[in-house]
Image 1: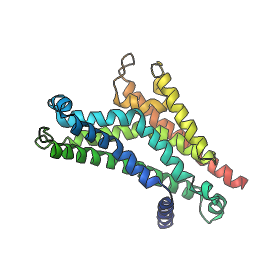
Image 2: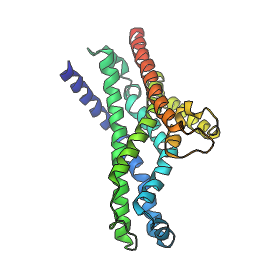
Image 3: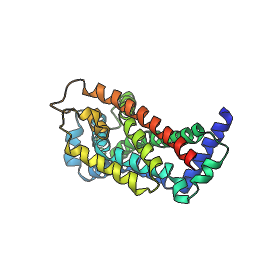
Image 4: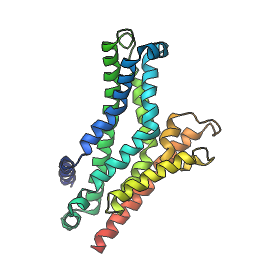
Length: 258
C-alpha cells in the first residue's frame, strides 16, 4: 500500500514537469533577494550605514518584509492552481478518478506535491538571501557580510513560523483549486481575499482572516492583543485542517458523481 502511494506520488511530481510550477518556485524564491542585491550594489552610500548595526539580521528582515506581506501569498495562489489543476487543463481528470486509486491516494499525493513545492520555495528563498548577501559584499567590499556570522537558526525558526502561518491559505487554495475547473477562478478569489485583507487589516478580529496571517506572523501590529501571533498560528492550522476535510469530502463526492 505504502509503495503504491509513493509510486503514485512520484507520478504526480512527474506531471509538474509539464507546468511552470518549478520555474515559478525558482522565480518566486529569487525575486526579492535579487532586487535587494541590485539596490545594495547601486546605492552603498545609503545601505552600508543602514546595515552597519547588524548586517545579516537587517538584510534578512528586508527580504521577509516583502515576502510575508504579499509575494508569498501570491506564490501559493499561483502554484496551487498550477499543481492541482493539471488534469483540468489537460481534460484528463475523469481518467484519474477512473484509475484503480483510492480517494485518499489521489487527494494526498497531490497535497504532498504542493507542500513540497512550497517547502522548496522556502528553502530556495533562504539560500538566495545568503547568496545575495555574499554577492553584495563581493561587489561592494565596504559591506561586512563576510565578517558577520549568518544567523542560520533565526532563518530556520522564522521560516518555520511563516510556513505554519500560511498553512491556512494552502488549505483554502487547495480546496478552491479542486472545486473550480477554471484556473482563473481560484486565482481571482485568492487575490481578491488578499486585497480585502489589506483593507480590513486593522479589524480587531483579523486573527480569523487567514490571508493576513503572513503579515500578522511577521510584523508587530499595534492595537492588536499581545497573543495575536499565537492565535494566528493556531487558527492557521485549524483553517488548514478544515479545508483539507472539505476538499477530501468534495473529492469523494465528485468521484461518486462521475
